[in-house]
Image (cartoon, rainbow, N blue to C red; front, side, top):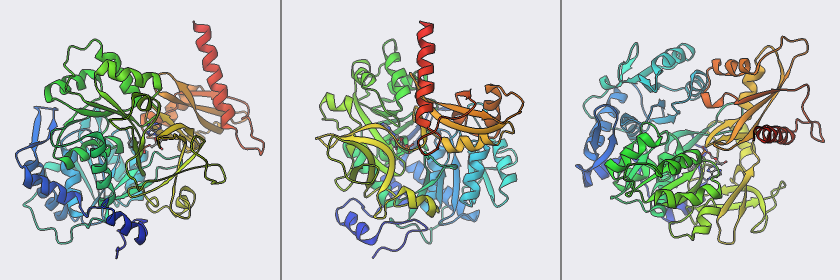
Length: 550
Ligand code: OOB
């Protein structure tokens, strides 16, 4: 029998049994997985962190460090089921921290380095976090100051641990102690961590993933992407994001006993020398970066010949751009269409080129159930475009502590409503045709329209606002905020609205790229704001501007 997972809207017992019987859920945990790899090959390099003097941690070292930090966390009163918000750049300590937490069954909450006071305060208070882990300074931003503000707003947050100079907080380096036996280690079906949803709602929702389900997505991805102990994975995107974490990502690489190389930034000037020096065999990028890399590859002096596979996902990769990958980089492209909620699709290494450049792949698992439906949830035939619903061995059955969202985001029989609009081909591949959710995909960075609208509405001169996407050559989409000012309000400039949003303590990528002032919004037949018309209006305007510039 399956016991209930810690606070997880879990998989019904019949499904859990089926996924176990099929061999997808192997009964492993992250803590044990690292222990096993370290026992198998303690001297093999696990993590290369080129920052500072260039560190290389072996599997044995990473395992020992995770043990000592786990004991230190326990000593600080952090235990099984406790939430710990982790906001770290691509540094080796990211892995030390998350494996220490995995080992004691505390749950990392994966914040991104771009998040600021508003988001972090929400994560800490909503999850009732016991601790928050940051780096001292990264990319010129002082996270200790952020932590001080967050602590002032969330008194229940007991600890702030800092990698580097701790300032008024606690140095992470002071936490580790002699290893102890963890009395009550997590079980494979327990929650392992909370991931953030890209979201379309006012505040980001949290995604509860279990050891069993996530580890399946790792080894399933490894098989599809050819990751084995000889692979070298370059983590170029922010390590906490689901794509570089698990598709197959750093954790997939560690599962395979491969080497992870951390890039502090994803730009070619940083990444290309690392590829050459470390013999990187695969990496994952969002489409705008893939474009930059293909351009830069033409003139680079660095030898990129070790690169075998480039995974591109997070947002739609255009066919034209996809066709340029192999000629420019000399490697195989794999398109990835995934989501932190679960389902991940890949084009396969042996798929014909036409499929690789024109589709976003097919699911990892034979047990991934895919439905393409119309607005009334009726199933559509192959080739028709509709809403993607999915259920399967690594897709959640509900967000964490969000019953009201779950009622709309999942069908009664547990299918997740992805909000993506897709078409299925005869070969079972999916083509992403659009999106029904109220979200802007800014080159892989997701912006929930409602979240930004709520912030702009707080401006005293604003009567109403609608945030929509506008087309962009580089990012695919950018954000445009249509604003109706209050009658008689002081005139406001668009820059003032942007500044207002920034000062509310939000990630920079959420600040609207453009603000348009209008007297009223176009309406749909039933009197709702027609975002479709707003999107068309701004797209037409951008086209006109471009035409007059040529
Ligand atoms: C990945 O995860 P999230 O959670 O940041 O975003 C998921 C959403 C999808 O629902 C879809 O709307 C969009 O991002 N998306 C794509 C795409 N990959 C993701 N849209 C079009 N084409 C693609 N290839 O973004 C993510 C998670 C794991 C692996 C890869 C990406």
